[in-house]
Length: 297
Image: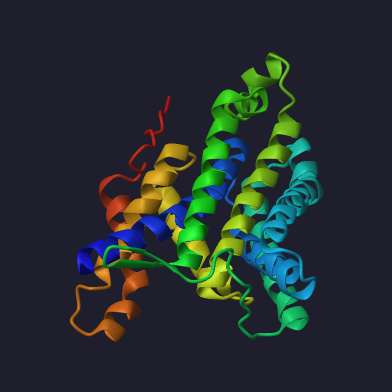
């Protein structure tokens, strides 16, 4: 019974991890940059859902639906205001600029949330209260509905990327921006769309994490570390790798937490298992499970 409980928890949390990591992977795949404010954007999504559902008293499903366009426009605004002009000017140290500006953006968002919401934990109501019983297995409603919504969003994302013209344009830019520009794809527009979708995925993950793990200004820090572990594990920019890596990390964390007899001590080491997994991947397969080795002339 303990095995089934831990496996169910791993599958539920792994789906939420996948949604969170896909945003980071998509941004890296198309824009070829690492968003160090990814965790804080997740935090923004958590607070946005909390404000819509709790402060404005909107229905929970409508609150989540309204979060999508707001988060997308927020991502597009960030790309156009902070990343586009230096990219167009082809500045010599653009990679270093991206690291600094996204890192500073994360600090700004975190310190903006502190005076607005305070350092206290906030919790919005889950989409479904109660629990679901399958035989002797009991799954909390907030986790189950969060996983179902995350699974639906991931399915829509995969359909968008592989079955729509715009999604194919994003994949073309990810493979070769120059070749994509030659055939008429607007690279700058694709970069804005990719960054907007990436921020949206992170924000939705934050909204779904909120009822489970609570919302506070520092919630994005630990989740950002997990997202980086997943992306490196699966392969930088690999959509399939991010999904597989998310479930691997969730399984390692879930079953690692029962290795020690003392539950309180075992849970304290849960995050360390993910970092240990990251070290092993970097040692034995630096390109990740589905990444490709870089070819040098």
